[in-house]
Image 1 (cartoon, rainbow, N blue to C red):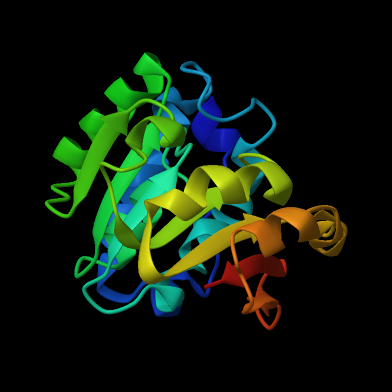
Image 2: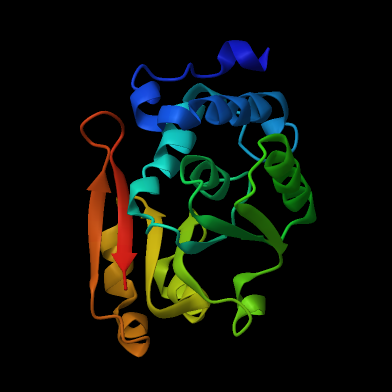
Amino acid sequence: MNSVNCEAAPEYIADFAGDNLGKLRLFADALVAQGTELGLIGPFELPRLWTRHIVNSGLLAPLLRPQASVVDIGTGGGFPGIVLAIMRPDVTIKMIEPMERRCTWLHGQIANLELSNAQVMRGRAEEYHGAVEVDQVTARAVTALRKLIPITAPLLKPGGEMLFLKGESVEAEIEAALKVIRKYKITNYRVAVLGADFTEPTRVFIAG
């Protein structure tokens, strides 16, 4: 029943995913089969699974530095962490997720998709301050910037970069987070709009 309601992969997906398309399809199939049942995606998300979730997450892939170490916080069902691990096999992805059920799912996907570059770390980002330092940190639908920056900035190496998928209200979030931005000495930040030429525009807060 779910497969009937699930969005078909868009026509551009082969160009978008390249050699990684097979694994993206397997991941999508797993979400169709179990995602709603396990509470990984909402019941009304299957009709936009590819465009709203998989492609949306994958738009970050070109922004990852070559051979970078990356932490994705609050990965949930694998967005963007699993998608990025599929699309950028040269990059090491650590996924921090507090919920045991979701961690079990992520472990299963790493095994099924043979993602040797991915790792799951159960807990909250704050628990790994001082223990983990990476080149880049990602997040999608976690919390507002004024709360997100303090829990992610300590995970970055000097010269590291934040890549946060955000909605249309990102400019208002930046305004509300200016005090925090100054506190963490973030002087170089911008909003990039990605994918507008072929799919729903995706906004990314980029800061380093």
